[in-house]
Image (tube, rainbow, N blue to C red; front, side, top):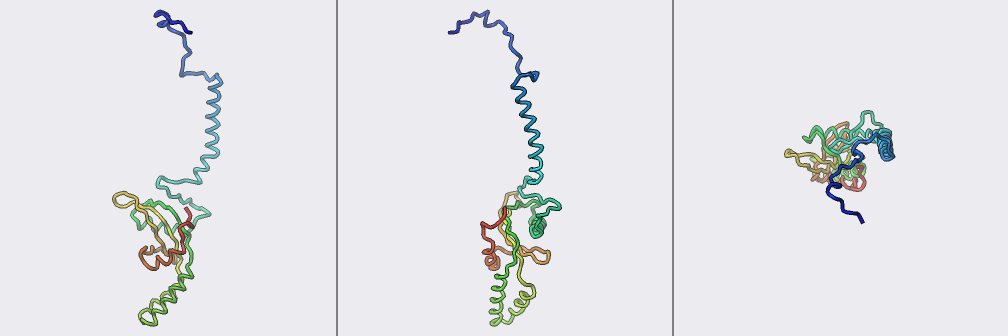
Length: 190
């Protein structure tokens, strides 16, 4: 049991080792310094190259690297169309479905147009247009843009790609509804 100190003993100054300052000679100091140096070296060797490859701006969309071998020209064209037509300079891509030529859909559409043209002669122009253009290359993109107020609005659109030009298909059209089955929800790339 510890004896109770008198008032004089309690007020007497005690020589303590000064805290907060160290000359680096203790084992604890050497461990901390070594761990810090190793952490910095690991970050420089592994972390910086990883961040360069996986560079993502605050908006969340991948930054297209110039000269990227895996660059998709269809995706780049849709990105450019979005920047030009959405009013948001930094749309956030949520999911991407690669462009495909919808041959089966084209054949069904052409057969239906020919059947309609038998009853309505004005449909012949539409049949000729379909035959001259051929099947569409179509892709799907889920993205988020900011509206006039600054709130994020999600979109899930199909885009038609023809001769370097991009056209968004109206989501409430029968054509878009027919094409959507070729782009199942679980098949898109993040």
